[in-house]
Picture 1 (tube, rainbow, N blue to C red):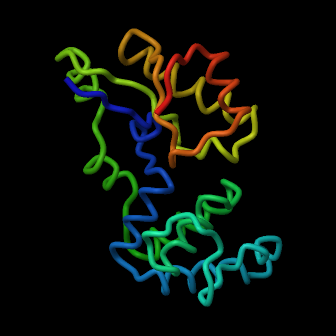
Picture 2 (picture 1 turned 180 degrees about the horizontal axis):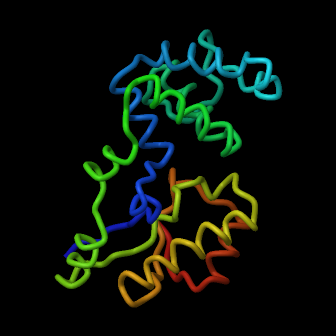
Length: 189
């Protein structure tokens, strides 16, 4: 038996940011993606995002130490950006690269029937949130909505609410732990 942690937004054709990053990095260099993001942030309508300009000459964090500097900086920026900003940039990057999110999603992630089959065959199906947002940086209201949405979808699909969660990016805050406990989760990995 195995445990499968489901990102529920994939069921409606959404590819999570971390996965979009990896897909783009398989097509473009980190250098090209940083240039594309910095050009995006430099647009007059995006002036408020200039503070997120990604440097190429130094690491912005000591996280992701197994990635080269450019890849680490790109991934970390995509993690800390406000959701709307990263979603819009990645949507444009996918479009400019000729990538179809819905088609790729069907190819890369399980559908409802496959998830039900896992459960019916005795595997454990648990929660990995709805859109795979970091629970470290999200607001309490955002965490509650993210978890409620994923739990409702999994309850409808499986007939039960999972009690175990895998933290997106392996990151969690004290306020997120309180929400998880409040919502009935018993274990987190």
